[in-house]
Image 1 (cartoon, one colour):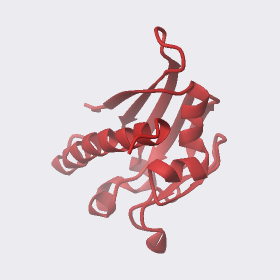
Image 2 (image 1 turned 90 degrees about the vertical axis):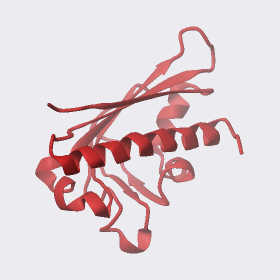
Image 3 (image 1 turned 180 degrees about the vertical axis):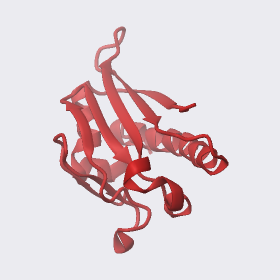
Image 4 (image 1 turned 45 degrees about the vertical axis):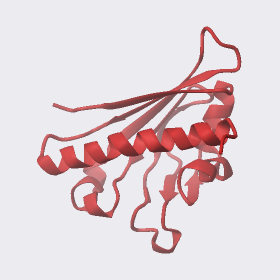
Length: 152
């Protein structure tokens, strides 16, 4: 069974702005990693670095954008932190993230962002990693909301 993580958040911004927050390096760096190297084209880099002095660890080094529809959809490969790199960071077992951007039907100036993270295996270590990312995505999306809505 391939369990999927699905997180949703509403932001007070347009889908275009939310899309930029995931694809423009200076904006991504405001809420997500310390350093980003994203090339927002299919096949482009989707590399995030939480420790730029050790780019091989705690990063998505080597990950690529797999699908892109401006202002609507972004998909990319994903790697885990050091504690999970032994089983989830090889090229043939990378997990996959899809981010979809929708205008809120009932609220102007509002965007709904869906993050879908798939590719989880059934082994106990994979389930531990999945639990870690279930919590991590919640925290990252709340940080995104703070930045977009300029909340302390």
